[in-house]
Image (cartoon, helix red, strand yellow):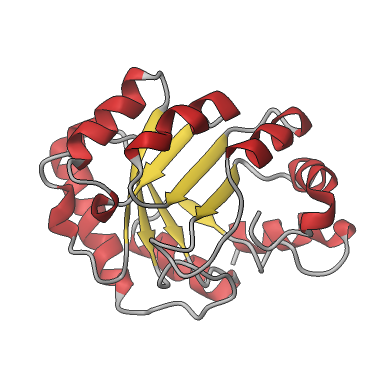
Length: 210
């Protein structure tokens, strides 16, 4: 939703729901952990009545632990955190799961895949960032394809059912490469919210069949 028209978020959410989106991905930025500000739990709460799709909330904030409860109350279904955003990421993931929500970890381009090793059994989702977080519209970082493949190998080796999501620079060309590397969820902003509302369905279809 970071690429949506913020003047009419409810209408934009309904439009992408009707266009065939599977999730609503919500990037929360605090201007501290990442160099940008977006929105907080009150805005997410206001968005919630406009769709029944799962809210996939990506928290780019630090420290993250004091705010987990606020995003649970706002209507998050999946809460993804960065291992660098708190002192004890294992405890953060436990907190999310105790609240009855799905838990995810996001790996920045500079974060090694080894950050997953001791928390993989607590995860429902791994989000590989193929841009540095903070702004939409950035170019896909090709070096992260190897991380996607390595993450997929780790998940399969453990026999776990974990979604592998990719976020950053996703468009038809890069979508195919991310899928081939092992991703099964694609996060796209600019590539979806391009053109008028009647273009959204075509934009999503192009990502599914790049």
